Length: 114
Image (tube, rainbow, N blue to C red; front, side, top):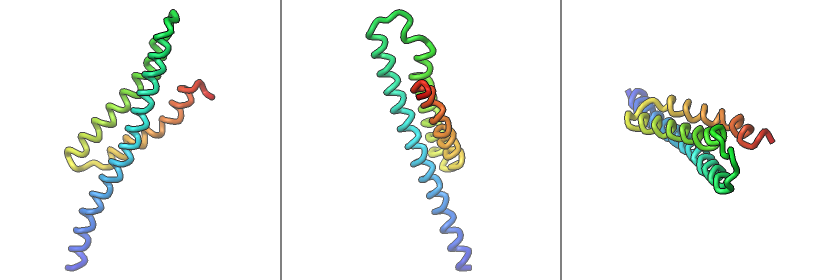
């Protein structure tokens, strides 16, 4: 009987720990992608102020501003949904890990492969 109470008490705290870990991981991913969004917006604005014809083009705006914005918004919405329902920590962890997994290839294209 004591073992069952201990198991129930620890399983509840384990769920809280999983959600806390998911929130921390998602927060790190959101901060990274939001930082890339701000950096990309600054890059696009600095090119636009130089008044060079054809720059920034649509591809640059999509790469430097739109993609980080979409990933940041998607992560925020998934975190809001999972925390609002108090479940599905694995979905939040999966979304954060996928966003961090595509970070390296994105940074390679972001910097021109250098």
